[in-house]
Every structure is written in C-alpha cells, then in structure tokens.
Amino acid sequence: MQWHKSSFSEDSGNNCVEIASTSARVVLRESDDLTRTIMTGPSVFRDLLIGIKTDVVGTR
Image 1 (spheres, rainbow, N blue to C red):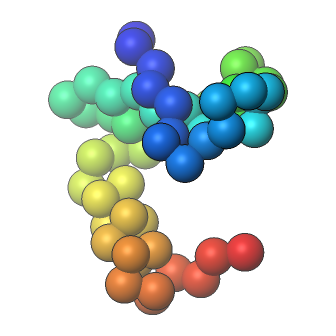
Image 2 (image 1 turned 135 degrees about the vertical axis):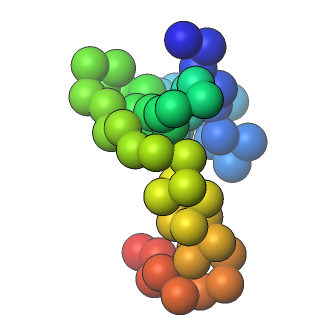
C-alpha cells in the first residue's frame, strides 16, 4: 500500500494522519503508531469527509 500524509500535517515530526486506499478499502493511520489502522469502505469514508466539510460531523 502507498501511504499519503495529510497536507495539513507538519513537515517535521510525526503529528499527522496518513491514508492509503484500494478499490475496496480506505485505511487510515497515525504516523506516530504505524501499527494501528482504521479500515472502512470508500463510500463510508466519502460520507465522513462530506460530513466534516459541511459541519455535520463536529471536529475537536
């Protein structure tokens, strides 16, 4: 899998979220713990992003 770091992440350090995807899965991980991942389907991930962008899903 090819991992991509968020463009909002800091250039130095490991304070970021990384994402990888296939046609069937989207995988997220924190750069400070590469062994912990969250997997979901593309449509669920798309709905999450839409919710965040439209402020339906709150952010902390």
